[in-house]
Amino acid sequence: MTNEELMVYAEKAMEKSYSPYSKFKVGAAILGCDDKVYTGTNIENVSFGMTVCGERNAVFSAVGQGQKCFKKLALVTEADTIVTPCGACLQVLKEFADDLEVTIKWKNGIKTVTLKQLLPMAFEYDLKEGN
Image (tube, rainbow, N blue to C red):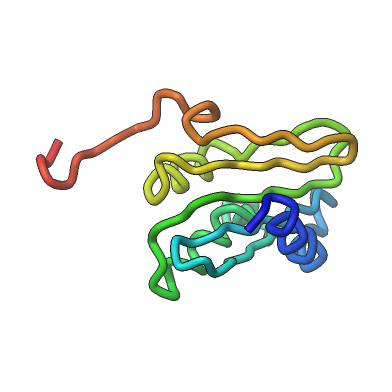
C-alpha cells in the first residue's frame, strides 16, 4: 500500500474526530504486517487526562484485534504546520514497530520520516533479558 492510499484512510478517520475542546482534529491509519489498515482518531474528554490521541487509538484498535506488527503510519491534521505524534504516542508506536515509517500530512505539506528520527532515544526494556 502506498503512503497516499494510507493517507486516505487517515483522512476518513479524521472526519470522526471528537474534539469539541481543542477543535484540533487528527486522523491516523496504521498498516499492519497482515496488510490490513487500522484507523483511529482523537477523542477528547472534559477531563483532559482521559483524552486519547488518534495514533494510540489506531494502535490499540489493531492490538485489540490481534495485530501487533506494523509497517507504516499515516497521520493527518488540518494544522498550518507539521504536527508530529506526541511523546506518549511515539513510545506506544515504538513498543510494536521499531522501524515504522511515518507519513505526516498537514494543510501545506506532507513529510515522511522514521519513528527512530522522531524518537531517537526511546525508553526500552528487553523482555527476554529482563532489563
